[in-house]
Image (cartoon, rainbow, N blue to C red; front, top):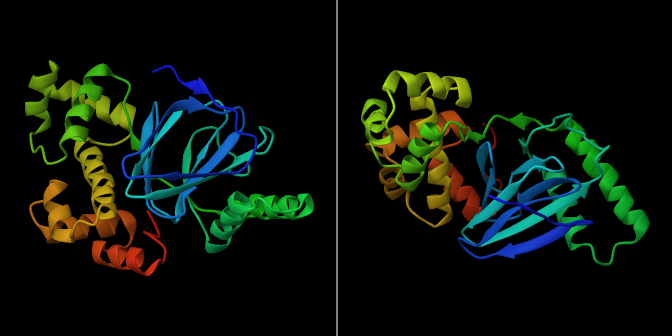
Length: 257
């Protein structure tokens, strides 16, 4: 990976078709990126996020990242000078987007006719909202150890792979106990917890493609809809059916995490 430095001076709107990708790059300023519709995948060297419209990812200046759209996606991004850090974090962070913050982002990224004073006022509102938001622990960590990355790539390619860590360890040439320890050290969670999160992130992409809950459950590695619904609700705070209906109505996506 050799990310390019992209100069973005202000708010940006980027319409993306399904599976469109923005390759690795970084910015000289902090960036807040979110989709107005669709589902946006955000990757950094250390983690991945699957971002529906009521969420965003704060990407600090200089952090390499890439994007991929799942379903037609209207990506919006606003920029902040380095001294401004309303979240007070130095790592990419997912956050909940309030209805007000969402409308401010839309206004700024649609605002070709805004006056300077109007833009300044909206940016102050955005900063105020960002100081109030809830940050969300929704990153799927991407471990650094090459053996763990091999395991991660196997499961990212096929989330329905049901092999145990012991079976996967033989495929990557490492002991199961070593891999289990490294998952806890580098991902901050056990291997089963990491795989559950991977499957749930994958399920959002399938829902964005219009798949049914039953098909999404099977394609995400679950034995049946009931197990999938229970895991989805525990992680996102909403059932898959409620999420599908909210997408159809244009309302917000999963609310908590």
